[in-house]
Amino acid sequence: MSFSIIILAAGKGSRMNSKIPKVFHKVGNLPMIFHVLNVSASLKPKMISMVVSNELESHKKIIKDRYNNIKFAIQTKQLGTADAVKCALSEKSFKSSDISIILYGDTPLISHISLKKSLEKFKKINSDLCILSMTPPNTDHSYGRLITKKDCVEKIIEQSELKNNQQADNLCNTGIMLIKTKYLIEKLKKIKNENKKKEFFLTDIVEILNNEGYKVSHLEFPYYEFLGVNNKSDLALVENHFQKIVREKFLKQGVTLIDPNSVFFSSDTKIGKDVVIHPNVHFGVNVQIGDDVEIKSFCHLENTIIKNQASIGPFARLRDKTKIEKEVKVGNFVEIKKSNLKSNVKVSHLSYIGDADIGKNTNIGAGMITCNYDGFRKNKTFIGENCFIGSNTSLIAPIKISQNSIIGASTVIDKNIPKGTTVYRKSELIKKSNKK
Ligand code: UD1
Ligand code: MG
Image 1 (spheres, rainbow, N blue to C red):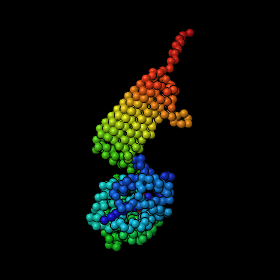
Image 2 (spheres, helix red, strand yellow):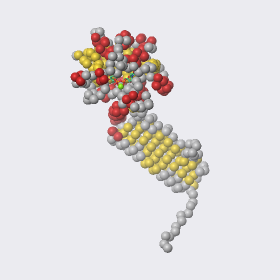
Image 3 (cartoon, rainbow, N blue to C red):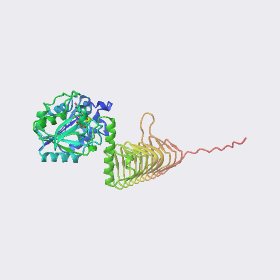
């Protein structure tokens, strides 16, 4: 049986109180919608259609660049989830899929495993519609409630339509459903907007199918995987749970996290074997760590590659296409930006290294600064292999210090240094007695 996926992402997201479209808010530094698109693509459906609003028009290119065979459907007025699905179905080729899976762009933690399992079950029990359900830990939420009889779902009541005596049952709608496409097309037309919000609720399709004798089932999943984001509190909760999932993944993979709860990862963080990460470390986007690396406390890393046996921190900031080769040591209060440090370089204390290439075995003394910005341009610094750069030196870029050179402490370097040269500035120490 063939299947296609519809992702609803056109909602106003007004409860987020933000000018950023809801589905572009990030979880693990990746927009929520990319999480949903990743899991959708991993299922290899016949087609993926994403329903977007006019406001998302400008974001379509970003999405297209990453996922080139997505079809877009525009929902010009946000009249509700049923209306959004109707927009997706205007794409004729959709009709050729036997099953439609409907996902919400604001539910980013759904896993490949759960969706695959649902699809298999849906085919096996020959259901006409299957709702993925969950039981939140309390009743203080805005999820729709499932009204069930034995294994069948009779209807879904939205929170806004709930009467007091219906509060007790807390089996809820995750928002995700699998439905035979022909019934989706047929029954969608019957949904009315006779509710307090005057919206066309997709969830009303449950009662319509049930009344007509079709088989409506549900499959319950753990609540946290299906958290929906409607406001910033939800976003914080989802982020929190995302971090738990990633920490668990790395722990299983053999990474040592001394205090897992204080380490924050991005969705694309990659870590090798026998890596030790101390408390309070933040991984921004695009960080790759090799094997046997130690990241000490209070480091902030983004857009950085760190090769085997390097030691970073505590209190180091690495960013913007920085590459750290093997056995490099980056110590405390060091910032490195857009630089390459070759193997066995040591920058142990209090340095700023920006737009620099540093050759292997070079030692950078405490407080060395690359003066890379002249107020107009960012200029490059080259330091060759086996150099010794003394403490408190300033290297005025563009500058080249060739291999095997020694720079004396407190020197300001504003000329290129040929290889094998020792340079220092001589200034006399003046001593004067304070006695009268
Ligand atoms: C919805 C469900 C609720 C479920 C919850 C799970 C309905 C009516 N209610 O409520 O039963 O428990 O999700 O998180 O479906 N959207 C559009 N166009 C619209 C309206 C919404 O594309 O006109 C999209 C939104 O971008 C979002 C999704 O549909 O991705 C769900 O909409 P939202 O307003 O968040 O519905 P909930 O109130 O969360
Ligand atoms: Mg929602």
